[in-house]
Structure formats: structure tokens, C-alpha cells
Length: 172
Image 1 (tube, helix red, strand yellow):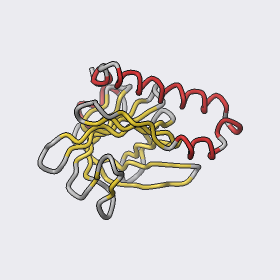
Image 2 (image 1 turned 180 degrees about the horizontal axis):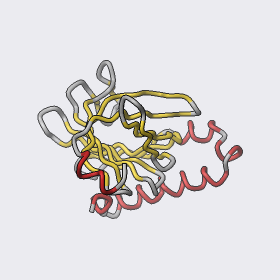
Image 3 (image 1 turned 180 degrees about the vertical axis):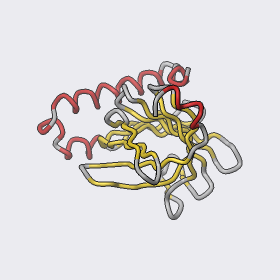
Image 4 (image 1 turned 60 degrees about the vertical axis):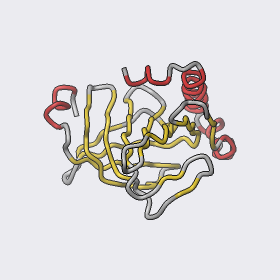
């Protein structure tokens, strides 16, 4: 999508494709909210078949995810709300910059997960780094050192924004 087609395509159906280690991890339908040429925002319902309790948050059927992907940043930020509208927080995936691909059936929003994650609670009091062990085990620091450095840099930057109370500046 180009920036000019972003307004026209708002609310268009897209397919979000989350890739990990070269394989499709999950694919789900979403609605395009906006595309300004840098940030792509989509909205989707929780794509899991059942609830998933992480201990610090529970994702469940009916939850609404407003997902922000950037073409020039190494992360995606997913605002999570209960079906009734209550903000649960933000789940941040450290990813390669997003790619949009036009397919015959729909536009695909392709995001490559690099294992690192960050959770920021609705009140921003709880900021948790996640999956650092998975990242270390992935071997990315050996197979693609520049990408590994970008991933760690992105996680550090998101955590810093959250801890400094500037997390919402991501969406301005």
C-alpha cells in the first residue's frame, strides 16, 4: 500500500502473517485502519482458538488488538483491549520492519518475529521483558549479527520509553 492508497483502503481486509524462523507461525484476518507509508495499523480479534494466560495478562476470545507495524522500525506494538473496551496493555513484538505484499486474495502484512517481546500494562506500572532466553537460543547473533543488534536496540528503546512515561509518543 502506498501512503496515497492508505486513506482509500482504510477498513479494507488484510491478512496478517507472523513469521518465525522462516515459517509461518500464525495467519489471521484483520481490518486495515490506516497506512501512512511508514506505519501500518490494523485491527483484529484475538486469533487464538482459546484463552491464553501469560500470568501478567490473559488474552481471550473477544479481545481486540489494534496492531501497529512500521516499515522502518524493528518492532510491532499491539494494543490489547477486552471485548468491552477496557485497555489491558500493549504487547510489543521485536520484529524486522514490516513488509506488505499484494496477493490475489488480499494484502498481506508480513511481520518476522525475532523472539524478543515487551509487555506494558495499561497503567504502565508493569513493564516486562520477555523471551530473552528464546532470543539467545535462536542464534541470531551468529547468523545475522546486524539484525540481532537491531533487535536488542529496539527492545531497549521500547522499554526506555515505557519506563520514562513516553510510550504513547510512539503513536503521535
